[in-house]
Image (tube, rainbow, N blue to C red; front, side, top):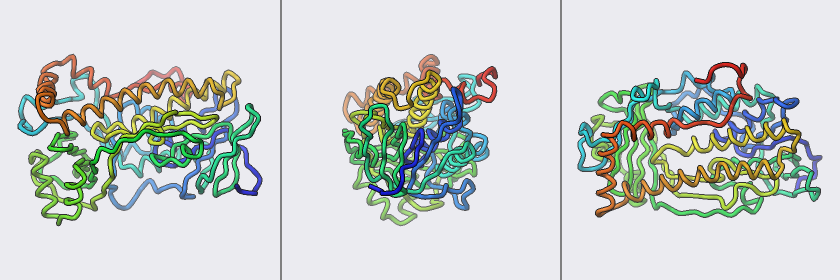
Length: 420
């Protein structure tokens, strides 16, 4: 425990990734119900990443329409808009079906009167934009790490948190520090984990054919391959494979890697040439046993980790951040303590149920379509073709993928302005 004097905050967010930075920016930007909140953001680096990086980032994220609105409310969308690459189409298919076949599941923004289905954005640009918005709103960026909690005995009192940057007092501590969350451990929250025994290979490649602003996803033996369209004409791949296969491809020569990649992509974009390094991430499912403990609340990967095949990880995390911010604003307007049990229990009920449903759905898709075999897998693959022929089902899936954020009127400059 640090011996320095504790410094007071209303909220201390731990973790400077997109979800933590979003939660911090939302909370720092809303002054409804009183003066601006004192919000600190604790992360290992004392400075924010640059918005305009010199090199393309191999790690990109897919953002839904709901996430666009959340980033706008956080003050980040106008900063990252020029680096957001919209995609208008999605194609999903599996071995045995030609990419141009009617059996390919196809989604098009025009079918629901939308300009696009979402955006692909490099991860570091989103984080940098959110950090800028947070700093502009008066938030305090703190370089340091969590050492451990020492909760004040008075139930109406704040949390006293020991960090490598000194002792901090906060009404509420938000754990947004990822799957290996130190906050979660410090507050004694257990987790349930399941290894998929898969590794995701992420890289940027240059396609022979134009990507047509289309997100492509193919189920392959033991995994999935996603081809995400980038604004410079390149494609970011997320290639989920059995660990042994992934290890071989990481060690393969560029020519060997590219040959296998074209095979697994069904040559839908022709030859694919590596345009950067290959990164690897082990895949697991993680669910925190609780989302709250005392005056601590978990968001994003600290609370839940899902398989990347649906591209929903960051979107679920941003919804966590937005719901938490909305409930905190409502609590403050009602004169309640930010970390009051009623507020935190409402957050846990809201987000845990929705996240559990998404976790179950993604896990089922992975088991049946990516790793399944036999009659059940065959039936699921035929169901893709049937869904492609149903306009009602497709509109339902597109609407669900676009998402619906919570009430964000408290962050609008003109609450009477029409919703988009």
